[in-house]
Amino acid sequence: MQIWGANNKKDFLIPFNRKIFDLGYSEKNKDKKGLFSKKCYKGTAYLDYRNTEDTPRRMQVEEGPLFYFYPFGKSKPSWQTRRVEKLQRKILEKNGFKYRLSCGHDYPIYGDGYCQFCNKDFQDEGLYCSHGCELQDRNQPHTFCKACLGPLSYSETHNHHISYRPQKTVEVHVSCHKEIHCGSEEYAYLLPPQDEVDQFYKKGKYEPTSKDLARKKSEKDKRKQLKLLKKQRKAPLMRRVPKHNHDFYW
Image (cartoon, rainbow, N blue to C red):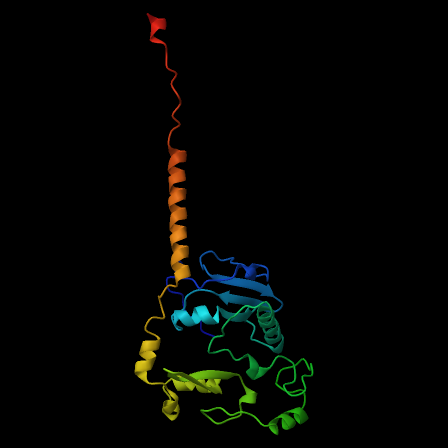
């Protein structure tokens, strides 16, 4: 999973709800402002509120922060880590939090220990608890990928834009979506016109919202107040000099 770096992260973070602190997320790394993490069983869940360069900013604000889950150490994702990740996503959805996933997110392809057909908890790798469930699921009617025409029940579906004006999407496999955007000639007919792509991504990277500008202005005022207080504290105290009666000396 590739996560792109943030641009102008100190000024243009995605607005976030402080209720994420009640769910156990915290911003431990002060150098990475806008990255919140939560330690879970088998790994760490992340909510990335930083402005990324691979998605237009207005889409990031509407869809929510980027969610991803990393297992502890250098261990590879297993059915256990995928199950914990699914649980953390359910907790966010239950509490009304919106989030988005990266294009390389492949969680449903490998399964989380529950049978895709009968929902049995078989606690092992794979999508089915038995060969019989796999055969029965194959006989069920499925929707098909618009690129490779394969059934969409065996992997995660992705909504791919074939047009931006008006917005039209089709369901494809995650792997097919990568091939479409990697310049595959076989799926070139699914790419939207280049002029629509340029217009859609034109203002996405650094466009601040009204909330960003208001927050930036308030932070600027706070810095001015703190600077003024520091100057007042450093200034020497002017003690009152008593006014003497001149008649006393004469």
